[in-house]
Length: 381
Image 1: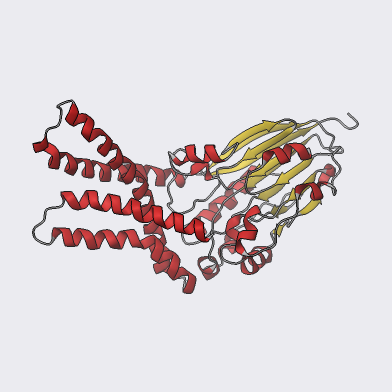
Image 2: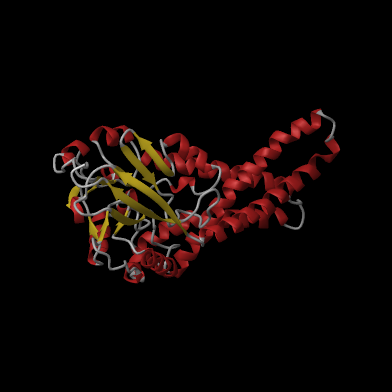
């Protein structure tokens, strides 16, 4: 984890330094303009880190504001960096072709910086609006196994809510309303219910605003990696206190003999917890002649899912990259970054998640609630 954070902070620093230099060169030297620019830039670039550090000791509306502003700055950092890099690539081409001469260089740099700011701001605004409008994502799945007298079964599943400084009361109330309208037989929460540090969650008891529909088979959850960031000893009891049963390498049997395996998150050992149980040991507890559903936050090692004979796996974690073009990165990491994959007899669905991490911006992905309509083989077939 230390290596991971060092890499992240190095990238964060270098990207900010790159954008800063590009702006500094085009700001006029007189009348303290460059000093004002430097101080303003440092202030904005520090908001996200300052918000995360301060909320660990004392969560408040002020730290929420820092996290929100810092999140938007991260989005600007991504798109500003990409657009300015594009201008740096274009500049020598334009000079070689004679379109741009040395006397126009400063003007080109100035307009490149202004354009990067305007275009980035427009993309962030569009992504912000998009993030506020979650959708239902519906899948119709057939499992060729009997489930008692059941012929159909409806699942509502939500991953990556990320309750915290940014996802708060309004978002959790909207999610509750969407789940209520979906009329499911069971509700699954697929990890990362909270964002990390518990201060922003506990301050307004955010889960008290969550209400799952009264459905036949109830409500179950699994842990994600973020449940361990703020300390599992605090996070997990808080979630369970609100009537949400977390499956910790457990198997539960629903109506019709539908078996649900809920796995602890694979990243738990990075935060000082024990390793989770191997999947094959959990499979000893199920009857593979009946439907088997696996809840696993991170969609990794899907060959293991196929080998174990899982009928349906539901996962999240990826956010589908959250912001274009990061979805191309997640596609390189995960066999399925978002959506549906059939692997042998196993079917895998990965949600892009309901909430966000960092910027409340989604481009190239949607906030969503999964609806999975299952149909089963006939009894004795």
